[in-house]
Image 1 (cartoon, helix red, strand yellow):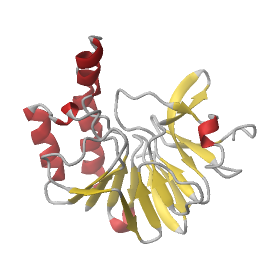
Image 2: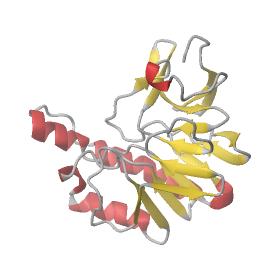
Image 3: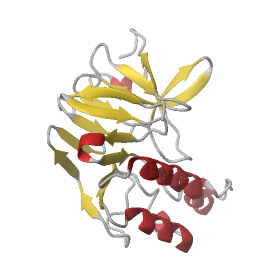
Length: 218
């Protein structure tokens, strides 16, 4: 699977090449920032047409990770839908997502783009604590054992921008899982005060690859 195993607060976790997080001991799969329906929202609001395949592509990758890990619990860390109307998925996509949810616990964490409860089932939480870990959308200063999303971190390597996890001794920030999502460079000032010295990035792609964050990065 070319994944990367690490520990956060004495908890064994695995970063998957797709950008999902797997907690094998608890059977938990975590994804962040699906932004389902983004192409439709952009077309609706601006008239700019993008290839309307991002929902299919995003759900395909999620389906593959679920098939590989067979989780008992899936946590979506917020911004699962791009806006209120985007939550009204096409019938085939809604049925696909319903099939993925069947037979397992599914938790929607509230995000800043999220429309609130949708007609897809599952639980809706502002955050969720399991053992030493707390799952929320946006990182909080001073938090420990925190798993969050929101920032869509990326790092430029060999001239190519790659989505990445950001990891230190206290927290993990997940990359965006959705296909049509931008990103914030790992050296952005937004991470100043969040990430401890010695933090690393875990690049996504063909394999999950840990790399040091440059020393001049906040």
